Length: 73
Image 1 (cartoon, helix red, strand yellow):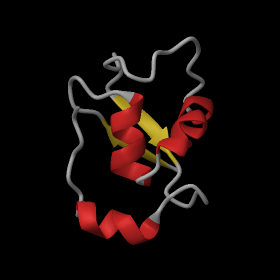
Image 2 (spheres, helix red, strand yellow):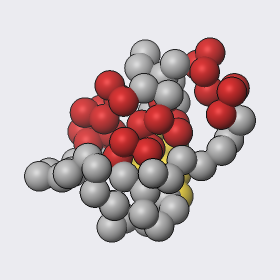
Image 3 (cartoon, rainbow, N blue to C red):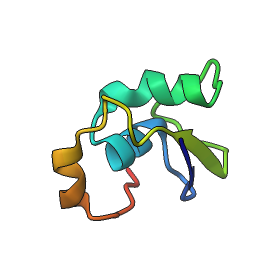
Image 4 (cartoon, rainbow, N blue to C red):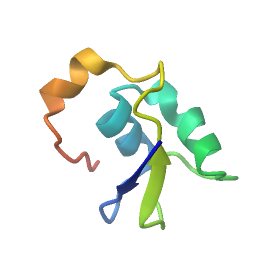
């Protein structure tokens, strides 16, 4: 598990793409952070989130292409 710092305006979709390269990871992010009744497209009002870089949902072959870039839609 790892805690990441969020940029102002990032949504769960942004984080799923940035950290997992996979929007199918959204339910996992919600579960890890015990989020309830959240709009996945809305800007998060949090400063950080827990993610699992060892998750089977991480598309590792694509992560190198993002090269630690931040995603903000």
